[in-house]
Amino acid sequence: MSGRREKGERTPLPKGYWTIWSTVALDLIGFGIVVPILGVYAERFGASGYAVGWLFATFSLAQLVFAPLLGRLSDRIGRKPVIVISLIGTAVGSFVTGAAGALWVLFLGRIIDGASGASLSVAQAAVADIAEPAQRPRLVGMLGAAFGVGFVLGPAIGGLAALGGPHVPFYVAAALAAINAVAAIVRLPETKRAAPAAPRRSFSVPTQQPLRRLAMLGFLTTFAFVAFEATFSLFGSARFDLTEGSTAVVFLGIGIVLVVVQGGGFGKLAARVGVPRLYGMGLFVVAVGLVVTGVSTSWLVLALGLLLVSVGQGVVSPSLIELVNREAGEERRGEAMGFQQSSYAVGRVLGPPLAGSAFDRFGVWSPMVFGGVITAAAALLAVAWRVNRNGPADAVVTTPAH
Picture 1: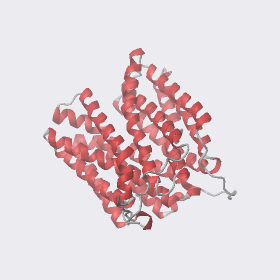
Picture 2: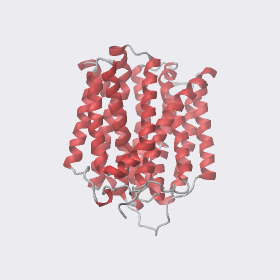
Picture 3: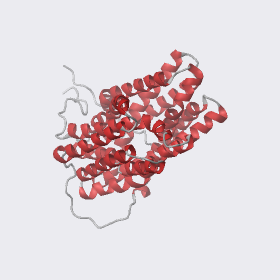
Picture 4: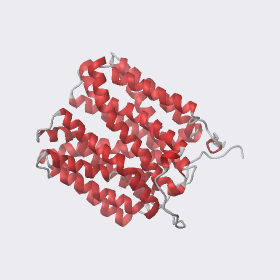
């Protein structure tokens, strides 16, 4: 033979994959319904901007605590029951938020929702359970595309539901999560293979140096991207006179690019370049894109910066997930994914307030440019820690001649 088939290409998808994918997509659609309107909804209960910021942070703080615990639980009792528990918790949290009559009830709803928000990390572990190693980057990338689907469809559904009253979108999100939980009970396969009983152990993922390093990189890149998300509407308004509607169109475009990159391009790039090297390249592209966005004064330069950020983020996120999969191994995959999700949660808690402070103190450009510098620092750490070095499993393969 003159070559080998590209890894992950033309291979049938594992049984149950689309059920996992649709479960995640529906969950993220519900998330997309709630997030864009939560701040305005909270103002009805007298919430200040400061309180709204903490309302968002509360979700991530609860996720920070509970995601590793639920991930570890999925290693013990299986992925399916934990995903179902998470979906039920999301339904309860959304319902409590919709039925709230006071601000403290909103916080309670967000705590419940955040504490049960492990469905994505456990689903990522489930995909890794059923995928062949060569196929895994492609499937993880496709799962990441569910993010884009959620943020394209969720806000549209939420906007239509809001025509029925301010509480209705949260009830719709709750109903969607409840239906998703029932469907998961019926259709979702259990992917965790039975293993011999192991002695009880303390939570020790953070003591494994490769996983600690990947968590640090995840924190830095999430911090930078969330800082961009949190302040872009302010940046766009100040420099380009963007309105709420035009800003929403920008994020719709970003979501579409993420769907295209993660749903189709990532698997092919990973097969050709190798996941570690692709991760390092993606970090560099995001860093350049954030700086270009921050210094842009024309529409053309702004569009270029946003395109670079979107494409780079589209390969960084699934690459990091695959790197965690490789380091964790089969028996601790859920725990490792939960720990990684906690590092993202820390970034989501700290990113918005610090980015807002930089915007006020240094100028409209600062959150983007500082975010680019932080992402560049992550890229340098990836080089220093050799995270971006391809191993034997990442050997570049060729397409057979026809």
